Image 1 (cartoon, helix red, strand yellow):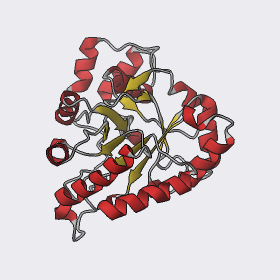
Image 2 (cartoon, rainbow, N blue to C red):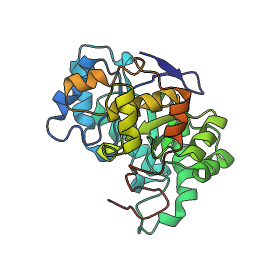
Image 3 (cartoon, rainbow, N blue to C red):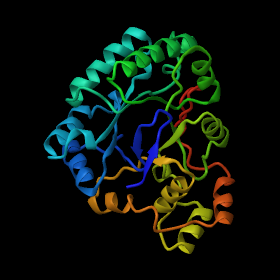
Image 4 (tube, one colour):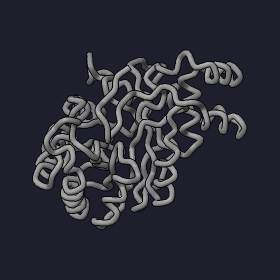
Length: 283
């Protein structure tokens, strides 16, 4: 599998397995299937409530721990120095490991409406300093963020020492977040896509359906290829073994540059309704 190199020299798989809501029924079996399909980057978070199942699958897979790239995230409502240290330790226990390959601040702000929603700058800096210490102690191989836009990243870059290695964003045709992506590339921050196929919300898009027909593939697969060609690490999820394997095959199709521009400039579509600075909107 193609590997990407983070800004600290650590190598990370270019395709990972997203576990949000993909482990709702039998998480252990789903993760074991993903491992059998060939996934080594497994992405989770405390709020996904599946760290124990992932840890069990990794331990029982027969594959050495060092061949996996395990990612988890700090709950947005547990920001702060002491909280970050405590929550990281709890994630280690649930995953049954003594280190993580990547640990992220899940959101730059707490849930909208909480008393500390507007105190995000201080809380992000405190949380990041805790992650920096854990990183320097060797307990995390790389640290990063999720759902951080340029103004959130600027706050960290101005007041802390370690540049985030990764920013995990909702990225797919119709929601390319070009400004945030450009900022990350300028600062050597690897982009990682959650919801790379728009959670099915793009199934009726005419541009995508026409291009999928042209390239003899599905809309979902076309979306993954698009992100992949943009140099973005993708985190597809599925509970079906054959689809898991198919989602790893992203080099079989090459989208032309003309069609890439068409996808980059699509009208907004498929957005999940979550924004770090606003109340959540669900469609």
